[in-house]
Each structure stands twice: as C-alpha cells, then as structure tokens.
Image 1 (cartoon, rainbow, N blue to C red):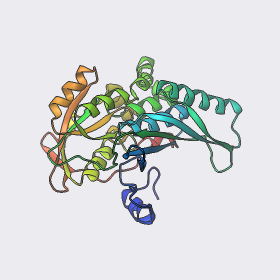
Image 2: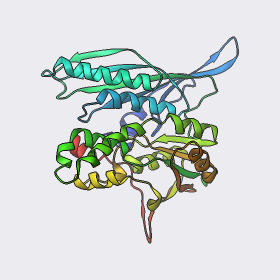
Image 3: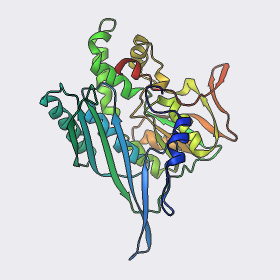
Image 4: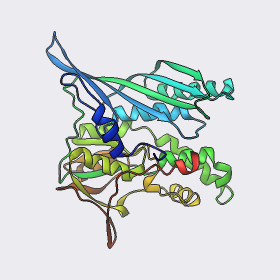
Length: 330
C-alpha cells in the first residue's frame, strides 16, 4: 500500500466493512475524523454524547507533541466540541535520548494549555518497531446536545474556507528543513513560515461558524484542500464545483512547495477550516467580523461530479492522494 492514510477504497473494503457497532451507535465514515458514543441521561431523559479523535504524527517533526495534540483537538472543534482531556502514546526508537521524550512532553503539555485542556494519561515505550518518534494524541470531549456525526450539508450549500491552505505543512518544512530552504530563499522567509504555528488552532473560527449556521465543518489536514473537498462532498453525498483561483495560499507556502516540488493543494493544511453553509457571504461576514480571513470558494452540487475550475480549464477532483509532505519528511 502507498505511504500516508490508506485510500478510501481500502478503508471501505478492509476497515468499515469489518467494523461492527452495537445497538444504535454510529459507525465510522469517510472524513468524520471522530468517534461518538451516544447515550441517554436517564434522570433528565436527554441524549448526550462522548466524542474522541485520534491524531498520529508519523512524519519527521521536532515538535510532534504539539502537532499531535493540535490535530486531535481540532477534529473535535469541527464538531463544536471542547476537549475535556488528552491521552498520549509515545513510541521512541532504540537510539532515542531522554531529551527527546522531554521535548515531546513539553510541547504536548504546552499545546494542551493553549487549548484549555490537559494530559490525563497515556503510554511511553522504547521499541525497535519505529525508527523515529511516533506520537499519537487522543482527544476526548462531550456534548450536552443531541449529537450526530452525520454531515448535514446539502447540494447548493456554499463552501467557505478560512485562512490559507498549506499552513501546517509549510510550518513543518520550515522547522525541519530550514537550512536547506535558506540555500535559495532569505532566512526571514523561513522565520515567517515558522510563525504559521500561530494560525493552527481552529477554536475561533469553529465557534463562529457553529453559531452562524454551518451545516458541516471539516479541518483541512492530511491530503490538503483536495482531500478535504472530497471528504466533505462524500459525507454529504453530493458533487461540488470549486474555483481554484479563489483558494487562498500564502506566498511562503508557494515558494517552499516549489522548492521541494510539492503540490500545495495536497499538503497538510491544519489551521484552515472548510465550512458548508447555506449563505456563504453571510458566513464570511461573520468570520471577518471576528478578524478571521475567509472566502467563498465554491458550492456543493446535485449528483456526484466534483469539478475544479481554473480559469477556462475544468477537471474532475480525484479521490484523496497521499499527502505531499511525505515526499520530504517521510
């Protein structure tokens, strides 16, 4: 199989087909990124839900603890759920120094504080099964409302994108390969790219979007904006039509992606939120009033055709590909 997340076909054939759930619990689905356990509070006769999300950092990253926590927390934020606690799994190679473990914990703990949560427990192990640190964060939260994982987006809903694509991948590349990038570009560009870490939380836009009529929210993470577009349409059972020229991207991302010969549209884009909403213009206004950059990039459509428009050229969106970051960071 290819490097990166398994393909949608493999997921359906070898995971979902064999995955069984009890009673009326919801099963996993493409692009949901969360698990949910629904139950009824007997005294109040109200339906409640406990949600969890898992985020592993498998690429080379000095700050794997930070990215693992952020990714897991962002997945819950897309369901409008605050993270109550985080658990960590840290697998270290046999040649790892204790200082590496300390750095991972320091970064994870700091990110938890930023996200107003804490590390409740986990597992640490040194093993020959890995050749570099493998950090996995599991975020758990609860909802006091009748909750469903179902994507409520519909055909004709508009698609709004916050911030810029490629933020997370650009930041990682600047952190890990900064010296190499500086062989072509000035140091200040690498420094600016490293500051993209300040954009990675979805807390602000998820809160605004949830209050402003969002039918579905999806974090633009592994596989980039192309994967997120496919997954939000797949979850809604619709097609889509998107104008590539309207998708915002930072110049630092363009330059660094070009340096490594990567496609920024298929690169880790944590920090950017894709929203399906009936009135995109109004959603953009609400987000901009909260000082969050946002733009309408397209819409969901009837049928299954998923079309990308680039000026006079149109083509079909393909199923999600492996994230481009793996070409550089493994």
